[in-house]
Image 1 (cartoon, one colour):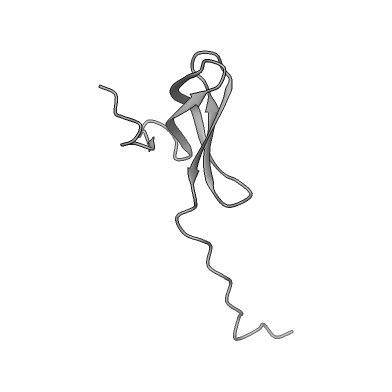
Image 2 (cartoon, helix red, strand yellow):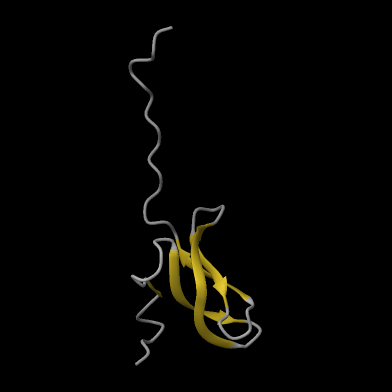
Amino acid sequence: MALPVSCVRWLVHEALPANKFMAEGYCVKCKAKKEISDGVEETMKNGRKAIKGKCPTCGTVMFKILGKSAAAPAPASPNPNPPSA
């Protein structure tokens, strides 16, 4: 039984390595929604996360933007005791 897209953004499978994901995306060449095979999570230049993989039918590159990162990196605090030379 397939889950509706509105309920599930992406699925993480235990059999895959930590950075591999299975997500549903739209293949422009097939003009249909399909699961992205060999999906890898990437962080774009603007800090948003995305999944990049291939269409299981035609092999075209598929790309799905997941959204903003969960937490922004904390600013580095200055060291109160600088090392002495």
